[in-house]
Image (cartoon, rainbow, N blue to C red; front, side, top):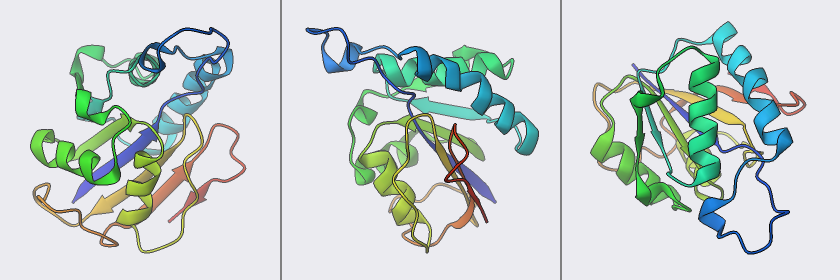
Amino acid sequence: MMHLTLIRHGKSDWNEPGIPDFDRPLNARGRGDLPTMAARWRDHHPLPDQVIASPAVRAATTARGLLLELGLPTEQIEYQAALYLASADMIWRVIHAHARGRELWVVGHNEGISELAAALVPMDIPPLPTCSWMRCALNLSAWPEHLPKAQARFVEFATPKGHEDMRG
C-alpha cells in the first residue's frame, strides 16, 4: 500500500509589488498555519519517508516548515523545478520519475495540485485551499507511469481552519 499526500503551499504574500511570482514568500497566516497543520499530521498519520516539493519560495517554505515542526530533517526534501505551476499530469510524471517512498508528500501549487487530487479519488473533492492536503492510499507496489484515475482510496482532506475537512 502506498500513501500519497498532496499539499498546497501556504498562503503567500502579495503585498510586495515587483517580486517575481516564484519568489513570493508566505505571509503571516501562511507561516502561522504550519504548526497547526503539522500537529494535525502528527496526531493522525505516520511521518513521510519522502517529500518532493516545488522550489518556489512559498512551496519550499511550506515543506520545510512542516518538516521542522515535525522534527524531521529538511534535507529529505527533493526540489523538482517541474512542479512549479505544474499541471496534474506533470505532477504525476514527477511522482513516477522520482518517488521511492511508500509515504510520499508532494508540495505544490494550484491548479495542478487540486486537479491531481480530484483525479485520483472516485469522489468529488473541492479545490485545496492554501496549506491544505488531500491524502489517499493506492493499492500499488510501485508508482505507475500513468495516472491511476479514480483508483485511489480517499483518506483525508484537511484544511487549516477545519471547516471543509473530510475523512474517508
